[in-house]
Length: 343
Image (cartoon, rainbow, N blue to C red; front, side, top):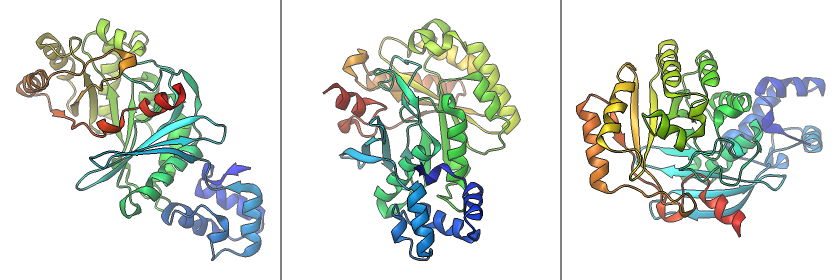
């Protein structure tokens, strides 16, 4: 059987045509699933009984089940989901005053082994399908306040641009007026910096947000933190980002995890200003690292954070400081899955 959410609206229309059913039933099915959050074909009461029977024989609606749910004091909610093959992934609901953001995974594990991230500690297993990512979004929406998600970020377990085709298919469905109808500018892809995929994304004609994990302005340090830098070094990455901005007129956000004793001294701030100065549409998001015992990394002190940020601001870099969320439930990527699978 197939997850029906693997199909675009046009693909579902073709299935129905082959069954001798009218096109408009495809929009009804999309509405039941994506707008009303219904996961049982029998509950789709405006569909003919014979169509509901045939749908049940060929498709299922939901391929995830919730294994564990953790709720933070700040209302961040983290989910550990089990896939049909027994693999585990994570997703998070992050509520704020004017938005409810869903954070979803794109892979089971990660092959890029960034030294500050728990996602890759158990290795890479496989890509998620479009339907599995839509499963995550559906379950987050159904479990959020008023069953609403206003924003979506592909920042969970895995590297979205390493699963390019399935992620882009999922985004186009998420963005569709017939589906979740989340605006493209409210959807973010976070990447470690895979240059060929960044170039490809620039030609997609999608107004989505792109976030690049930077974490150092020095090739040696960045390579130690992010092995991908040995393949796509900073000079080449900055050129690809400059080209992306030129082609899309979209701002790039650079994510920068602050790690005590590694990447937040004055010399690093100076280097950071130099490599970003030619990018007209960019900002840098400073993130104090999480304390993860397995990674042996320490978060910086508050004064260190503020001094680093203030220097960047003085040099004209648009620097923001991300407020930590869900620290009491280990909401950072891969932490819950790591704890669960190590038991």
